[in-house]
Each structure stands twice: as structure tokens, then as C-alpha cells.
Image (cartoon, rainbow, N blue to C red; front, side, top):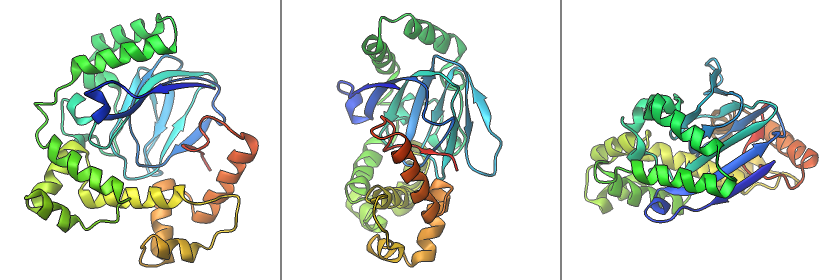
Length: 280
């Protein structure tokens, strides 16, 4: 697959990790995307499918999709040949581009048409499809994002950004009560702003970061003592950790390692090898 990415210029760099272009044949037809992941994807190929949790039906997305902070593993079903441009947002970064509170979209992916309207996304897709190459496409996407940016209209964005940055820097190992005291607001006010801007509470975001940091630190090639992993990450016990694992990945810890090893063995050095996983 061809993968091109870059960090956008200010002020987008405070909201976005990177803009990316992706084209080619995915390593697997179905990939699981564990959180944290806040995305906007403009699809330029055949429709893809998203299943937002094991208890819901998959749905097709032709123009693309918008995904706020998920609370569980999502499954992406890719066509044989995928082509898209997209945005990896910071947890708070999508809010200034949404016409509704992020909480309305939690674990409920929507099409870009539902967010920006059919004429706008149709025009954007036409311009992207006729661009000279990936770099021009990313420049076009960046210009569209700057045009739609509504920083002043996003209440609580600065508060949520500052507090979320602490949660991210500590990998979720911070007392939420201390964060509200440091911010000079009540815990109820902080939780409400988080739900409006990110879609989840500070506590939920901290859980997500703690889990992500724990899993990314694993070495799938070596032996793993799950009890030590759970204890070092601050989980109450191994059963609690296993419950979190299934919620965030759809897999047991043991099965996760098997799938991870399979990916690394079958596609060494693949551009996606540190992000999604084959669906079990």
C-alpha cells in the first residue's frame, strides 16, 4: 500500500496529528481499529464497511465517514482496492468541524454528507480525485479544513484541550479530580465539556489512554506475563484487564498476541503494522 502523511500547518496542528493519503490493497479484507482513534475519511474508491462494535450491524460508507472517540473496537471492511484521504485528529480536534456535540456521534459513525452536506462533499471528492498526486490532495484537504474551522464557536475547547493533554502525557495515570481542581471547574462541568467536545468523559478518556499505552508497550515476539502487565498498568487484577482488553479490541489478550504475531509474520514492515489488526 502507498501511505503518505504530514502534519498540517497552524492552527490545524493543535487539533490534528496528521493528514494522510492511503491507496492500495489492504493486508486483510477486515481490520479492527482499537481506540483511541478520531477520524475523518474522504473515500475515493469503492465503499467500505464499518461495524461499530460486536453487537451492531455493519454499514456501507461511500463518500467517507466521521468517527469521534470510540469506546470499543471498530471493524473496517475494505474493498479489494482502497483509496482515500483522511485526518487523524487529536481527541479534541474534531469538535470545531462538527455542527453537533461530539457526544451525539459516540460509537455512531456517520457519513461526511451527514456532517458537511452532499454538495460540499461531492465537490471536495471531485477536486481530490482530479488532483495531481497525494501531496496536492493533502493540500486541498488542509485548505478545506481551514475554511471550515470554527474555533471561537467551540465552547470549552481550550479547557478540554489542556486537560486532555495532561491525560495523554500521563497515559491516563492521573486523578480526574485533580484535573478539575487544577482547571478551576467542578468535575461535573469538566465531564460535560468533555462529552460535548470529545464525546466521552475525562475518566473514559483516561481509561482509553491507559489501555493504549499498555498494549503498545507489549512485545508480541516475546513471552508475556499477563498478571505482571495488568499490575504494572495499574489494573485492579488480571480479570479487570482482560475485560478492558475485550472491550477495546474485541479479543482476549492471548488471542490479540496471536493475531499481532500473524500480522507481523505475514506482512513484515507493512505501513499499517502498528495501527489496525486483522479482524479475528
